[in-house]
Image (cartoon, rainbow, N blue to C red; front, side, top):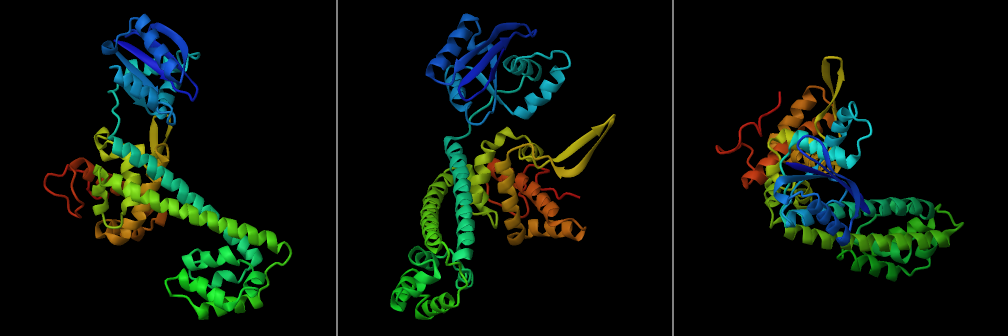
Length: 404
C-alpha cells in the first residue's frame, strides 16, 4: 500500500508519498493549483509507480482550495481522504518527538499510514450548494447589520430625535423618508403633502398625514448637529440605499435557498418547531452527508460544542466550556436554532427550563439544547422523517435520550 500526502495551499500544493513501512518513495515536490499542476501530480505518481488502486491520498480541508484537486483525483480513480487539520496537528505533536524536521506532505502521508482512515465522499451537489448559499446569506445579513448600525450612528448626529418616530427605523416607510430628507433642515424644507405621500405610498397606507406632522414637529425642535449636516445627509442616504439593495439580495437568496433545501434531506429540519428554511439550510449544509457521523457525539465534536479537556499527569477533566475547535458556522446555526426551538417546542423547552432551575446560566442551558438539537437534526436527515417530540420505534437508540 502507498500513502500520498498533499499539503494544500492557495497557489502551490506540496506532494509526497511513503510506503507501508514509512519509507519515502516520492520526495516532496510542488504542483500548482491549476490544470497543469494537477497533470503534473498524475505524472509524478505514475512515474513513481503509485497506482490508483493501491494507494490512499490524504489532504487537509484547507479553506476551499482542496475541492478542485479532490474532484480531479476522484475522477481518476484515487481514494482520497479529506482530513480535519485538528487531527494532523495532534499527530504532528506526537510525530515531532521522533522526527522534528518532517515536511507537512510527508507527515500527512505518515498520518494516513498509521490511521488508515476511510476515503471521503462529497455530499449531494444540492447540499454543497446549500452550504455555499447559506454562508453567503450569513455574510449579507452581517453586512446589513453593519449598515444599520452605521446609519444609526450618523442619524444620531444629524437627527437624534428620529429614532423615536418609527417602531422600526429601517421599515419601508422610514427608509423611503431617509432617502429623501434625513436631516431636520431637509424635513422642514419639504412640503407636508410630499412627506405624507412618501409615507403613505411606502407603508401600505398605515402612515399618513399624522405621521408626517410628527416628523415635522420633531424636526422643529431637533438638536441635531448643523455643522457638516450636508455630509451627514449624503452619508445617510447612501447607507440606506445600500441597505435596501442588500435586503433585496437577501430576499432573492432566500428564495434560491428554499428551493435547494426542499430538494435535499435538510427539508426535514423545517418540521422542528421554530426552525425555518434559512436555519435549516445552514445546519443541513454544514452537516452535509449525515452518514459521515456515526453518532451525535461526533457531530457535536465536529461543531466544536464538545467540552474542552485539560490533563495533568494521569488525571483528565473537563472545564465545562465548549472546545470551539470545529465548524463555527454549524455551531452558530445550532445555537441560533436552539434559542428558537426552546420557545416553540416543549421537548427542548422543558430541558432548557430544567437547566435554568439547576442554576445554569442562559448560555450554558442554551448550549445543552443545541447539543440535543444536533442529535435530532442528524437523526431526521439520516432517517428521512419529520420531527416528533417522542421518537418512533425504528429510531436509533440514544439520539434523543435526555441528559442527566
